[in-house]
Image 1 (cartoon, rainbow, N blue to C red):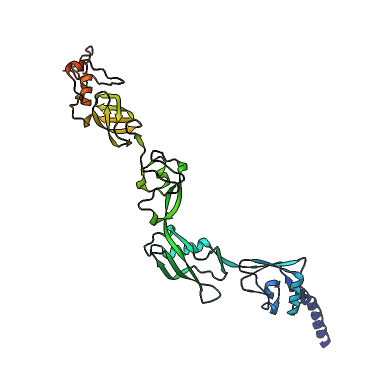
Image 2 (cartoon, rainbow, N blue to C red):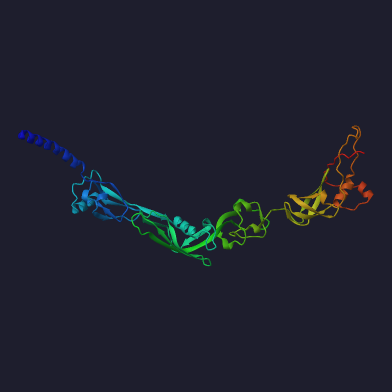
Length: 379
């Protein structure tokens, strides 16, 4: 009975030996072709799988933050043997790529952080309109990957006269209870987007799309409301201006449709009558402006509104002369009766306020006139 039991135990031990050997084969240390680390040292456990108790042994200094380095396999094995790590399976790996993770803060990120710290403070406006310049050229900043917190300003100083700032930030991290501290100095000024001339412009030139571009300029340089690009195109300047000059709303006006001493068309308009004649502008004016004009026929100076290029309209209601009553047809007018003619010459004389005798009215000839009259009211 005892012999049988021993035989059974011996058989079981023999069966277990191949399984244990298989486990040892599966758990053999294996070299990795690519390694990613977050600390400043590379450990055995970073380079190989199944490193066991040797995993925490440091063997290399990590690459710089955010960079990748290469290690030849022969060199790695030599270092591992020195640390009593042997039997490492390398396969066909020729070198090991080691990358150190980092948190990268781009220059724009830092500028936005400073602008946000100054947002609507110290007399400044929105953060989006604050331009930041650092004392030292900061292209980007790399921090340990454990710095996962936001940039929190803890001390902010700003001189409104010089635009100088001095701001301290803190960033919370995962590996250390003490936050990472950063400090930046430089200048910050509020800017505004404004249309700027791309070439010299005279007073009479119309601004085209190619004549203006958008730029950000210090708000202190723009005395008044800055003009947008869309608002300036098609307008005129109040005075000649040189290329590179920012344009304010006060610098632009509507284009002159009528120039001083220009021959223009005068339009007389009253209910039931539309008449045109020649005239000369006494002053320049844009569309909608009220200007004086000389009637070349009557030699009278009239006041009208610029309604188009070379065109001035005089409304009958604005004249002191009596207006012709509105005419309409009534049921008492027989169909075979012709409407009574309107004394057009007398009406024109009243509109332009030109003195004339009854004989002159009868013989009045108005050059280049288009008359439209309504039928007279019957009695």
